[in-house]
Image (cartoon, rainbow, N blue to C red; front, side, top):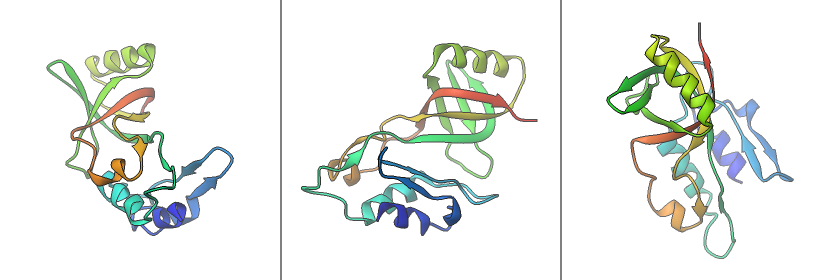
Length: 147
């Protein structure tokens, strides 16, 4: 049900939605040239009505986002083209984050970042009652310069 609800989003490539029941994972990607709006994703999960008494929840949300990395004061921010919602990048893997920060300070701007979105976890229905806070933060696991 959650898989089908995710696939119905206009920005998700329906042919790329995979459900791994053994792992309890749903994997999907945006259509070429589109972005997955996390607010809409939250609403989509809520719309499945997977709530009260099911014992279901979300353990985590991992994302890969491509954009321009900028060091602003004490924080590192990823500005995704086509979105007005930046991601604050935080340390997930300390060595990877240090390399990312060094790359940003050297002037490498365009990067692909993979990591876990903070505050995207919890049991239903409490998790589904309100949107996680903004700006969204990603605990960085991997990054690659984009040429």
